Image 1 (cartoon, chains in turn cyan, purple):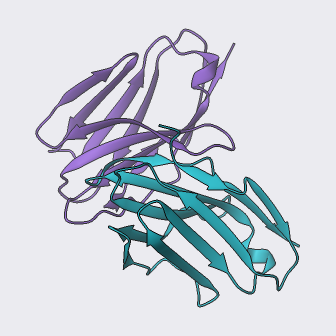
Image 2: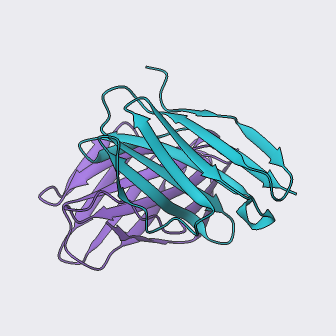
Image 3: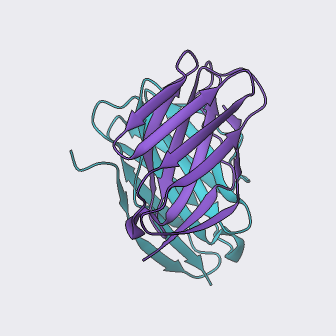
Length: 112
Length: 111
């Protein structure tokens, strides 16, 4: 298995632009999570899905952030419009039956 | 889950030495998990220990769990430069799938 695949690895965008981050979880995993990591705040859980259904989005910072999981093999995290304070590394993770998450390599987002 | 508090925040040792990191949590748990993060990479799941277990081994890793003290420790024996990373613990209560991460222990193994 190739693991959790995220794209792009790096994204540089201008303030105000829309950014879409993508994630392909491990086949058979029924949970998918989006995390954000910064030096100041550490790792923050943004949202997670179970069987493609959003379960808890209380960590999504504001309405500019949205996440979807149209099927078991794909999820997106969208920021519109982006702001410099959104600069961070965004991680996607998946797990089976809630134990032992597998993380992707992350997307490093820079908003200038 | 609840945030584990790792201690120390930073640890620097020589290659070949053992490294011990500690984790404390506040309420009863279903299991406790340890993760490693190399600089600029995603987290890697190292080991899961259930609340009815007291000790678990995986290669050079040894994890202990003391539910009476609400604490866990991760021991890395015969450390290598490649073990340089941040290590996080997560205490999982069960009934909640969210993993909440603390600030971790930053381990540096000097060659």
